[in-house]
Image (tube, rainbow, N blue to C red):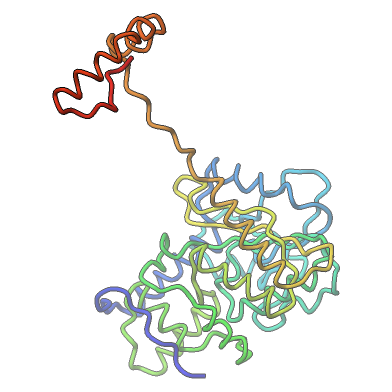
Amino acid sequence: MPRRTSRRTQGPPRAISRQRCIRICCETYTLLHVTGITRAPARDEALGLLGRFLAGDGIELGPGHNPFPLRYPGTAVRYVDRWKPDENEGLFPEVGEGANFPVPDIVTDLNVDGLSILDDASEDFVIASHVLEHLADPIAQLAEIHRVLRPGGVAMILLPDRRLTFDRARQGTTLEHLLADHAAGMQVPDDAHLEEFLIYTEGWNNERDAAKRDATFEHHRLRSFHVHCWTQEEFLPVLRHSITAMNMSWELVDAMLVDDVPGSIEYGFVLRRSLRPAGASVLAQRLDDVWAALVESRQPPVTPEPEPALTWRDVLTRHPVYRAARRPFRPVKRLGRSLLGRPSGELDAG
């Protein structure tokens, strides 16, 4: 596969040591994937509200030690993870003691096996919170999520906004790039993806020692990193393509926009596998229309400009008695204007 083109958006990166680079990526991965975004009442409230669409039996992919909050009864979740709790604790010691990693019900490597262990149409919901950006082939994972959902089942997709994380110096992953990775059957992020991530998150110094370079790359592949990154607008073409070109019947039910929660760095989509057969063009148009409506609903209402306060003369000249008293004098006023050579079509108020 050809090397990924450069995506630099600012000056040349600083060179840093291998040790510092490892530390930085450990911290950033822990921030978003293991520890989750800093818990705040506003975020918990927003996620809890989105959880009203989740009911029945479902799965959460990669819950870390902050699983998605499920507040409503009638919901049962199984966890899907690459590692068991003791392995998570060993890989991410920086989360500290007391981190409660749930025991996964299903252990699998999503990059390699996807959700092949699950039958078609077997789940009522699938939660993927800050997962897709870590995968080599997010499009394949979207297809797997769609496959295992029953008609009417719900996918909860949450992603970080690249502009508000350590990805801010990177350009968004284009649909064309994702399709190239998908066509190549990529299961393990290649060196080009790793180099691009390391250079534009904190300045990879392109280690010349082959052994050290390989060890560093293997370390990041094991712990995972942001292989891809998007804004909420940049991810929409991915969803649209999954409908128009991959026969996925997504309906956009709701969304959490990045500005919905003060200080948030994430956005999310609530997608339902359609209950009724519909053409791809219809579903794609519905996606665009519902997204536009959701964005519009967040706009503050337009407040009309207040009218200027009335003066005493305004009040007087608008009074019906005053206007009636002035009416007999209008012919005289017109005659005077014509004699003076002024326009006769305009009269004083009243």
